[in-house]
Length: 206
Image (cartoon, rainbow, N blue to C red; front, top):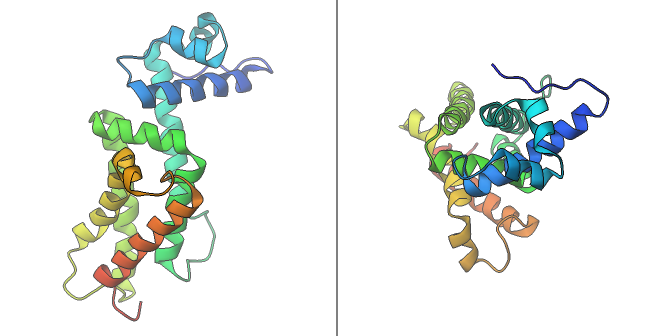
């Protein structure tokens, strides 16, 4: 497995700069249409430095993939040792909107990976499902879910609501007064999704 070469005190900053430039370009164009030279130009470094840290284009993409997976997991999972959300629907919703607002490039990359049906897209989707499935299992054990609820679709539907909004964002924004990723519109969307989940998948008292 390729690993970025981070020797030298300036290495971490240059690695992050290159990785972030690659993240933006890969999200916008896809892997096939993005070259190492374009990444170097976008990062303001030499192509030699890109190769020094990442070796090959595949090594750079591997580093970007690992970063994206880490951001998704660390943002959507509550920090270890924290108390359970008093309102699990609101807690999850706030973490999802925080990821969209604070990590827009990651969200764009994730959307591209899913649309292109890449291995990292499948890995991200499966990770999202695992997180959601565990959450709905806990809700079922606590007697919170609606009677007769299909547990598999209980985990899948919130993913569809989230990923669908991200992938269809340009179309959604034709019907919104400002970009979807503004705090105001994200709050509207979060409230609407939370209402659908509460009224469709949870017991009324939950």
